[in-house]
Length: 458
Image 1 (tube, rainbow, N blue to C red):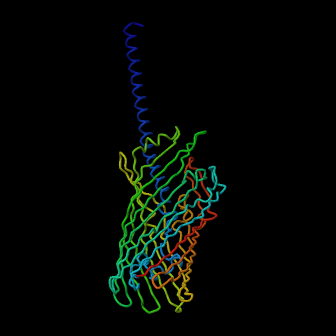
Image 2: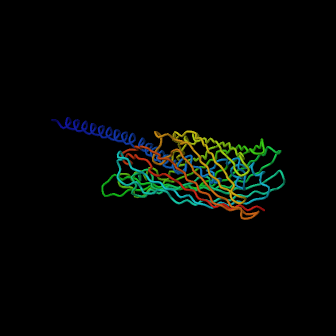
Image 3: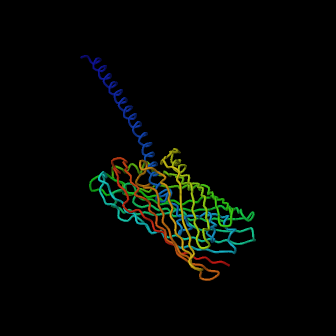
């Protein structure tokens, strides 16, 4: 081969290999872009949706319809919008304040004592136990004051907590990749005013300012032998405003009818997910969501309540109520992801509106004792098909009783107890190979409310 021919040959070879190298680089770059960009989007979407589902449990305080009903434990809330017997009516129906003949102060310290035990079904694929009693002691307290300005006008204020609960399943719970600990603590201040229009109609209104703290923890499966679980934790505070209106009708002397409306209250919790102990295979998640803030709104839904109290005998009364809560609006909400690229993901938890029905009685024993008892039913806001591990929401049955004793003309004291059966809450969840399949139900799902009541008239 001549020298010129060899030079031409090697020039062509170099040109061919250079083109091949550039082609390989273009293919590698294209593959990298095709892989990394969807992966980034998938990771952000997966993390944000996981947070939405996980947070949903605590935002609804272990069941979207779990309202603490800060008044009328003794009657299981029956007749709450028409009772108007003490200053707690400032919270349940401000129009009822006009029935109080003097200024009045009511305090109700108490506690929530839950008993929650999960039974694991054979279809569960992760190891671990049932978590024991996941219920957490939860202190309760309320303060109500009504001031008589004139024969027709009353001012009031209510300080109370109407939503909240906590759960601790432990680190070895079979569902630890869904949730291990969660809590919602809330407090509310509600100034109110009421006016007696005539001898059969009173009206009232108020606005509320609420503060809430939301926390959540779960484990992350590293899926590697001899590598312990990682962890995810979230915490946020926020405040919200709302309002309420009510009317009280007295068509006849023995009958009172109350109607109330409470507006929705919108909390906007912001979280920066805190990840710990991720193994080599999952550490890229920390890099992908570094600096990301997830904004999750929580709406305490609007509700309507109608109540009635009828004096059957001078020492015996019957009461009841029916109510509606707009949990379907709560079930679908936007989640904002604040990062390099702002975006919003819409979550749908498939909630339904709920109904509330209650019936109760009060019986006066002698001149100084008053015994109360009642039963209430709240429907489940989510069906079995849509229920999941962090939202084990079922129907609720409430049984209440209480006793009051008139110490003197100015002071009355008593105690009340309520048992809530929150239902078995069966569910079956499948969330990928890391979290696994979790299936089971609650063998015991009871909440005990106890309260002391002191009424001071002056």
